[in-house]
Image (cartoon, rainbow, N blue to C red; front, top):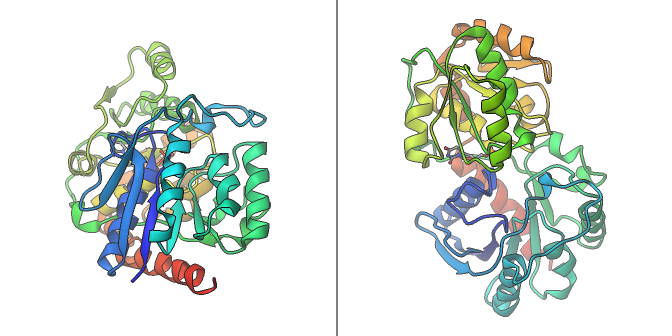
Length: 354
Ligand code: UDP
Protein backbone atom coordinates (compact mmCIF):
# COMPACT_ATOMS: atom_id res chain seq x y z
CA UNK A 1 0.00 0.00 0.00
CA UNK A 2 1.35 3.38 -1.02
CA UNK A 3 0.53 6.65 0.68
CA UNK A 4 0.43 9.31 -2.03
CA UNK A 5 -0.19 13.05 -2.01
CA UNK A 6 -1.63 14.56 -5.20
CA UNK A 7 -0.93 18.26 -5.65
CA UNK A 8 -3.62 19.59 -7.96
CA UNK A 9 -3.68 22.17 -10.73
CA UNK A 10 -3.28 25.77 -9.59
CA UNK A 11 -5.58 27.40 -12.18
CA UNK A 12 -8.87 26.55 -10.47
CA UNK A 13 -10.53 24.63 -7.68
CA UNK A 14 -11.56 21.05 -8.39
CA UNK A 15 -15.19 21.04 -9.50
CA UNK A 16 -15.06 24.56 -10.98
CA UNK A 17 -14.31 23.53 -14.58
CA UNK A 18 -11.53 26.11 -14.73
CA UNK A 19 -8.91 23.34 -14.59
CA UNK A 20 -10.35 21.46 -17.60
CA UNK A 21 -9.86 17.73 -18.05
CA UNK A 22 -7.19 17.40 -15.40
CA UNK A 23 -9.92 17.90 -12.77
CA UNK A 24 -11.62 14.70 -13.93
CA UNK A 25 -8.25 12.94 -14.18
CA UNK A 26 -7.43 13.78 -10.54
CA UNK A 27 -10.84 12.50 -9.38
CA UNK A 28 -10.64 9.32 -11.44
CA UNK A 29 -7.07 8.50 -10.60
CA UNK A 30 -7.62 9.05 -6.87
CA UNK A 31 -10.59 6.70 -7.08
CA UNK A 32 -8.79 4.08 -9.20
CA UNK A 33 -5.82 3.95 -6.83
CA UNK A 34 -8.00 3.92 -3.69
CA UNK A 35 -9.90 0.99 -5.21
CA UNK A 36 -6.55 -0.81 -5.42
CA UNK A 37 -5.94 -0.23 -1.71
CA UNK A 38 -3.67 2.83 -1.81
CA UNK A 39 -4.20 5.88 0.36
CA UNK A 40 -4.60 9.10 -1.63
CA UNK A 41 -4.88 12.64 -0.28
CA UNK A 42 -5.28 15.64 -2.54
CA UNK A 43 -4.04 19.19 -1.99
CA UNK A 44 -6.01 21.66 -4.09
CA UNK A 45 -7.12 25.29 -4.15
CA UNK A 46 -9.71 26.20 -1.53
CA UNK A 47 -13.29 25.38 -2.55
CA UNK A 48 -12.24 22.11 -4.21
CA UNK A 49 -14.45 19.08 -3.90
CA UNK A 50 -13.91 15.42 -4.82
CA UNK A 51 -16.18 12.42 -4.32
CA UNK A 52 -14.93 10.01 -1.61
CA UNK A 53 -11.41 11.51 -1.50
CA UNK A 54 -9.81 13.59 1.26
CA UNK A 55 -9.07 17.08 -0.04
CA UNK A 56 -6.90 19.61 1.78
CA UNK A 57 -8.02 23.05 0.58
CA UNK A 58 -5.37 25.75 0.36
CA UNK A 59 -6.08 29.48 0.16
CA UNK A 60 -4.41 31.85 -2.26
CA UNK A 61 -4.63 33.42 -5.68
CA UNK A 62 -4.90 31.25 -8.78
CA UNK A 63 -2.36 31.02 -11.60
CA UNK A 64 -3.21 32.47 -15.00
CA UNK A 65 -3.69 29.51 -17.42
CA UNK A 66 -0.47 29.27 -19.39
CA UNK A 67 -2.24 28.57 -22.69
CA UNK A 68 -3.59 32.13 -22.67
CA UNK A 69 -0.03 33.49 -22.83
CA UNK A 70 2.73 33.68 -25.42
CA UNK A 71 5.56 31.13 -25.64
CA UNK A 72 8.14 33.57 -24.32
CA UNK A 73 6.11 34.69 -21.28
CA UNK A 74 8.22 35.07 -18.14
CA UNK A 75 7.52 32.89 -15.13
CA UNK A 76 4.83 34.68 -13.22
CA UNK A 77 3.14 34.17 -9.85
CA UNK A 78 0.45 36.36 -8.29
CA UNK A 79 0.70 37.76 -4.78
CA UNK A 80 -0.17 35.07 -2.21
CA UNK A 81 -0.03 32.41 -4.93
CA UNK A 82 -2.02 29.25 -4.24
CA UNK A 83 0.60 27.33 -6.24
CA UNK A 84 3.35 28.36 -3.82
CA UNK A 85 1.06 27.80 -0.81
CA UNK A 86 0.16 24.27 -1.95
CA UNK A 87 3.84 23.38 -2.37
CA UNK A 88 4.73 24.87 1.03
CA UNK A 89 2.08 22.62 2.51
CA UNK A 90 3.45 19.64 0.56
CA UNK A 91 6.92 20.43 1.85
CA UNK A 92 5.79 20.31 5.49
CA UNK A 93 3.95 16.96 5.15
CA UNK A 94 6.19 15.24 2.58
CA UNK A 95 7.62 12.73 5.05
CA UNK A 96 4.16 11.28 5.71
CA UNK A 97 3.98 10.14 2.05
CA UNK A 98 5.78 7.63 -0.18
CA UNK A 99 5.28 9.84 -3.21
CA UNK A 100 4.05 13.29 -4.25
CA UNK A 101 2.33 13.73 -7.62
CA UNK A 102 2.27 17.10 -9.33
CA UNK A 103 -0.68 17.83 -11.65
CA UNK A 104 0.15 21.49 -12.31
CA UNK A 105 1.79 22.54 -15.54
CA UNK A 106 3.54 25.49 -13.88
CA UNK A 107 7.28 26.05 -13.61
CA UNK A 108 7.49 26.10 -9.80
CA UNK A 109 6.86 22.43 -8.89
CA UNK A 110 9.48 21.31 -11.43
CA UNK A 111 11.97 23.81 -10.05
CA UNK A 112 11.26 22.69 -6.46
CA UNK A 113 11.78 18.98 -7.19
CA UNK A 114 15.46 18.78 -6.09
CA UNK A 115 14.62 20.55 -2.83
CA UNK A 116 12.24 17.81 -1.68
CA UNK A 117 13.27 14.57 0.06
CA UNK A 118 10.19 12.68 -1.11
CA UNK A 119 10.10 11.69 -4.81
CA UNK A 120 7.87 13.85 -6.99
CA UNK A 121 6.15 12.36 -10.05
CA UNK A 122 4.96 14.93 -12.57
CA UNK A 123 1.80 14.28 -14.58
CA UNK A 124 1.83 16.69 -17.51
CA UNK A 125 -1.62 17.63 -18.77
CA UNK A 126 -0.82 19.75 -21.86
CA UNK A 127 1.60 19.80 -24.77
CA UNK A 128 4.57 22.18 -24.94
CA UNK A 129 3.42 25.70 -24.05
CA UNK A 130 6.27 28.02 -23.06
CA UNK A 131 10.04 28.19 -23.45
CA UNK A 132 10.58 28.50 -19.70
CA UNK A 133 8.46 25.47 -18.80
CA UNK A 134 10.06 23.34 -21.54
CA UNK A 135 13.49 24.23 -20.18
CA UNK A 136 12.77 23.39 -16.55
CA UNK A 137 11.05 20.16 -17.56
CA UNK A 138 14.09 19.14 -19.62
CA UNK A 139 16.40 19.84 -16.68
CA UNK A 140 14.28 17.87 -14.24
CA UNK A 141 13.72 14.82 -16.43
CA UNK A 142 17.49 14.68 -17.08
CA UNK A 143 18.11 14.62 -13.36
CA UNK A 144 15.16 12.40 -12.38
CA UNK A 145 14.51 10.01 -15.28
CA UNK A 146 11.23 8.14 -15.23
CA UNK A 147 9.36 10.73 -13.17
CA UNK A 148 7.25 12.25 -16.00
CA UNK A 149 3.92 10.88 -17.14
CA UNK A 150 1.55 12.18 -19.75
CA UNK A 151 -1.59 11.25 -21.69
CA UNK A 152 -0.72 10.48 -25.33
CA UNK A 153 2.00 10.06 -27.94
CA UNK A 154 0.75 13.15 -29.80
CA UNK A 155 1.31 15.14 -26.63
CA UNK A 156 4.74 13.55 -26.06
CA UNK A 157 5.78 14.55 -29.59
CA UNK A 158 5.46 18.24 -28.66
CA UNK A 159 8.36 17.88 -26.17
CA UNK A 160 12.06 17.23 -26.88
CA UNK A 161 12.00 14.70 -24.00
CA UNK A 162 8.68 13.09 -24.99
CA UNK A 163 10.21 9.67 -25.69
CA UNK A 164 11.34 9.48 -22.07
CA UNK A 165 7.85 9.94 -20.57
CA UNK A 166 5.39 7.29 -19.48
CA UNK A 167 2.31 7.38 -21.72
CA UNK A 168 -0.65 6.66 -19.50
CA UNK A 169 -3.81 7.62 -21.43
CA UNK A 170 -6.97 8.37 -19.45
CA UNK A 171 -10.14 6.69 -18.19
CA UNK A 172 -13.55 7.30 -16.72
CA UNK A 173 -15.85 5.56 -14.28
CA UNK A 174 -18.06 3.87 -16.87
CA UNK A 175 -20.76 3.18 -14.29
CA UNK A 176 -21.50 6.91 -14.18
CA UNK A 177 -22.31 7.12 -17.91
CA UNK A 178 -25.56 5.72 -19.32
CA UNK A 179 -25.64 4.34 -22.84
CA UNK A 180 -28.22 6.14 -25.01
CA UNK A 181 -29.22 4.64 -28.34
CA UNK A 182 -32.04 7.08 -29.14
CA UNK A 183 -30.42 10.42 -29.91
CA UNK A 184 -32.33 13.56 -30.80
CA UNK A 185 -31.48 15.59 -33.85
CA UNK A 186 -28.79 17.71 -32.23
CA UNK A 187 -25.02 17.80 -31.83
CA UNK A 188 -22.84 18.47 -28.79
CA UNK A 189 -19.74 20.51 -28.13
CA UNK A 190 -18.20 20.45 -24.68
CA UNK A 191 -15.23 21.81 -22.83
CA UNK A 192 -13.69 25.05 -21.68
CA UNK A 193 -14.89 27.91 -23.87
CA UNK A 194 -11.50 29.35 -24.78
CA UNK A 195 -9.75 30.19 -28.10
CA UNK A 196 -7.56 27.05 -28.22
CA UNK A 197 -10.76 24.97 -28.43
CA UNK A 198 -12.04 26.81 -31.56
CA UNK A 199 -15.74 26.52 -30.78
CA UNK A 200 -16.36 28.92 -33.68
CA UNK A 201 -15.55 26.12 -36.16
CA UNK A 202 -18.25 23.88 -34.69
CA UNK A 203 -20.74 26.76 -34.80
CA UNK A 204 -19.85 27.47 -38.44
CA UNK A 205 -20.34 23.79 -39.31
CA UNK A 206 -23.77 23.49 -37.69
CA UNK A 207 -24.79 26.74 -39.36
CA UNK A 208 -24.28 24.97 -42.69
CA UNK A 209 -25.97 21.69 -41.77
CA UNK A 210 -28.92 23.22 -39.92
CA UNK A 211 -28.63 20.75 -37.03
CA UNK A 212 -28.69 22.50 -33.62
CA UNK A 213 -25.59 22.48 -31.42
CA UNK A 214 -25.76 22.21 -27.63
CA UNK A 215 -22.74 23.73 -25.90
CA UNK A 216 -21.68 22.62 -22.42
CA UNK A 217 -18.80 23.98 -20.39
CA UNK A 218 -17.16 26.75 -18.48
CA UNK A 219 -16.86 30.11 -20.23
CA UNK A 220 -13.19 30.71 -19.53
CA UNK A 221 -12.87 33.77 -21.75
CA UNK A 222 -16.02 35.88 -21.83
CA UNK A 223 -14.78 38.14 -24.67
CA UNK A 224 -14.18 35.08 -26.83
CA UNK A 225 -17.71 33.76 -26.23
CA UNK A 226 -19.24 37.22 -26.90
CA UNK A 227 -17.37 37.35 -30.20
CA UNK A 228 -18.81 34.00 -31.30
CA UNK A 229 -22.33 35.19 -30.43
CA UNK A 230 -21.70 38.39 -32.41
CA UNK A 231 -20.25 36.59 -35.44
CA UNK A 232 -23.07 34.03 -35.61
CA UNK A 233 -26.18 35.94 -34.49
CA UNK A 234 -28.67 33.45 -35.94
CA UNK A 235 -26.73 30.24 -35.30
CA UNK A 236 -28.65 27.23 -34.05
CA UNK A 237 -26.74 27.07 -30.78
CA UNK A 238 -27.85 26.69 -27.22
CA UNK A 239 -25.47 27.33 -24.30
CA UNK A 240 -26.36 24.97 -21.46
CA UNK A 241 -23.78 26.04 -18.84
CA UNK A 242 -21.22 23.98 -16.94
CA UNK A 243 -22.84 20.75 -15.76
CA UNK A 244 -21.85 18.09 -13.24
CA UNK A 245 -20.82 14.72 -14.66
CA UNK A 246 -24.23 13.26 -13.76
CA UNK A 247 -26.15 15.96 -15.62
CA UNK A 248 -23.63 16.17 -18.44
CA UNK A 249 -23.73 12.48 -19.37
CA UNK A 250 -27.52 12.56 -19.51
CA UNK A 251 -27.58 15.53 -21.88
CA UNK A 252 -24.62 14.34 -23.92
CA UNK A 253 -26.26 10.95 -24.49
CA UNK A 254 -29.15 12.64 -26.28
CA UNK A 255 -26.85 14.07 -28.96
CA UNK A 256 -26.11 12.55 -32.33
CA UNK A 257 -22.36 13.30 -32.16
CA UNK A 258 -19.73 15.25 -30.28
CA UNK A 259 -17.82 17.85 -32.29
CA UNK A 260 -14.19 18.34 -31.20
CA UNK A 261 -12.51 21.22 -32.97
CA UNK A 262 -9.38 22.12 -31.00
CA UNK A 263 -6.94 24.47 -32.69
CA UNK A 264 -4.08 23.31 -30.43
CA UNK A 265 -2.65 19.85 -29.97
CA UNK A 266 -5.08 18.51 -27.43
CA UNK A 267 -3.13 16.41 -24.91
CA UNK A 268 -5.98 13.93 -24.62
CA UNK A 269 -9.57 15.18 -24.60
CA UNK A 270 -11.44 13.60 -21.71
CA UNK A 271 -14.70 14.71 -23.33
CA UNK A 272 -14.06 12.20 -26.13
CA UNK A 273 -14.17 9.16 -23.88
CA UNK A 274 -17.14 10.55 -21.96
CA UNK A 275 -19.01 10.76 -25.28
CA UNK A 276 -18.03 7.22 -26.26
CA UNK A 277 -19.29 5.92 -22.92
CA UNK A 278 -22.71 7.44 -23.65
CA UNK A 279 -22.70 5.86 -27.13
CA UNK A 280 -22.04 9.18 -28.81
CA UNK A 281 -19.72 9.14 -31.85
CA UNK A 282 -17.02 11.79 -32.25
CA UNK A 283 -16.27 14.08 -35.15
CA UNK A 284 -12.83 15.55 -34.51
CA UNK A 285 -9.95 17.26 -36.22
CA UNK A 286 -7.28 14.71 -37.04
CA UNK A 287 -4.58 15.88 -34.65
CA UNK A 288 -3.61 15.51 -30.99
CA UNK A 289 -5.34 13.22 -28.51
CA UNK A 290 -8.61 12.74 -30.42
CA UNK A 291 -6.67 11.33 -33.40
CA UNK A 292 -5.48 8.51 -31.11
CA UNK A 293 -8.95 7.88 -29.67
CA UNK A 294 -11.43 7.95 -32.57
CA UNK A 295 -11.57 4.79 -34.71
CA UNK A 296 -12.12 6.18 -38.20
CA UNK A 297 -15.54 5.22 -39.57
CA UNK A 298 -16.24 2.98 -36.58
CA UNK A 299 -16.62 5.25 -33.55
CA UNK A 300 -16.57 8.57 -35.39
CA UNK A 301 -14.77 10.53 -38.08
CA UNK A 302 -11.40 12.25 -38.09
CA UNK A 303 -11.40 15.17 -40.50
CA UNK A 304 -8.75 17.45 -41.92
CA UNK A 305 -7.72 19.90 -39.17
CA UNK A 306 -9.38 23.33 -39.36
CA UNK A 307 -11.68 22.26 -42.21
CA UNK A 308 -15.30 23.33 -41.71
CA UNK A 309 -16.23 21.46 -44.91
CA UNK A 310 -14.68 18.34 -43.42
CA UNK A 311 -16.86 18.70 -40.32
CA UNK A 312 -19.98 19.25 -42.44
CA UNK A 313 -19.33 16.14 -44.56
CA UNK A 314 -18.79 14.04 -41.43
CA UNK A 315 -21.99 15.34 -39.82
CA UNK A 316 -23.92 14.23 -42.91
CA UNK A 317 -22.60 10.67 -42.50
CA UNK A 318 -22.89 10.35 -38.75
CA UNK A 319 -25.89 8.01 -38.78
CA UNK A 320 -23.62 5.31 -40.24
CA UNK A 321 -21.87 4.95 -36.89
CA UNK A 322 -23.10 2.21 -34.57
CA UNK A 323 -23.53 3.72 -31.11
CA UNK A 324 -22.97 0.32 -29.48
CA UNK A 325 -19.47 0.27 -30.99
CA UNK A 326 -18.77 3.59 -29.24
CA UNK A 327 -19.77 2.31 -25.82
CA UNK A 328 -17.83 -0.88 -26.51
CA UNK A 329 -14.64 1.08 -27.25
CA UNK A 330 -15.02 3.00 -23.97
CA UNK A 331 -15.41 -0.27 -22.08
CA UNK A 332 -12.49 -1.98 -23.86
CA UNK A 333 -9.97 0.85 -23.66
CA UNK A 334 -10.89 3.40 -21.00
CA UNK A 335 -11.84 1.56 -17.81
CA UNK A 336 -10.81 2.99 -14.48
CA UNK A 337 -9.25 -0.26 -13.28
CA UNK A 338 -6.87 -0.40 -16.27
CA UNK A 339 -5.85 3.21 -15.56
CA UNK A 340 -5.25 2.27 -11.92
CA UNK A 341 -3.01 -0.62 -13.03
CA UNK A 342 -0.90 1.61 -15.30
CA UNK A 343 -0.36 4.32 -12.70
CA UNK A 344 0.25 1.77 -9.94
CA UNK A 345 3.04 0.19 -12.00
CA UNK A 346 4.60 3.58 -12.63
CA UNK A 347 4.36 4.66 -8.98
CA UNK A 348 5.77 1.32 -7.76
CA UNK A 349 8.81 1.79 -9.99
CA UNK A 350 9.35 5.27 -8.58
CA UNK A 351 9.04 4.21 -4.97
CA UNK A 352 11.15 1.03 -5.13
CA UNK A 353 14.07 2.52 -7.10
CA UNK A 354 14.84 5.06 -4.41
N1 UDP B 1 -16.96 19.29 -18.35
C1 UDP B 1 -17.88 19.24 -17.31
N2 UDP B 1 -19.08 19.85 -17.47
C2 UDP B 1 -19.44 20.50 -18.61
C3 UDP B 1 -18.49 20.53 -19.68
C4 UDP B 1 -17.26 19.92 -19.51
O1 UDP B 1 -17.61 18.65 -16.26
O2 UDP B 1 -20.54 21.03 -18.68
C5 UDP B 1 -15.64 18.66 -18.15
C6 UDP B 1 -15.50 17.34 -18.89
O3 UDP B 1 -16.03 16.30 -18.11
C7 UDP B 1 -13.98 17.20 -19.07
C8 UDP B 1 -13.48 18.64 -19.00
O4 UDP B 1 -14.60 19.46 -18.69
O5 UDP B 1 -13.41 16.44 -18.04
C9 UDP B 1 -12.80 19.08 -20.28
O6 UDP B 1 -11.63 18.35 -20.41
P1 UDP B 1 -10.84 18.01 -21.73
O7 UDP B 1 -9.81 16.98 -21.39
O8 UDP B 1 -11.77 17.65 -22.84
O9 UDP B 1 -10.12 19.38 -22.16
P2 UDP B 1 -9.18 20.43 -21.37
O10 UDP B 1 -10.11 21.41 -20.72
O11 UDP B 1 -8.37 19.66 -20.37
O12 UDP B 1 -8.33 21.08 -22.41
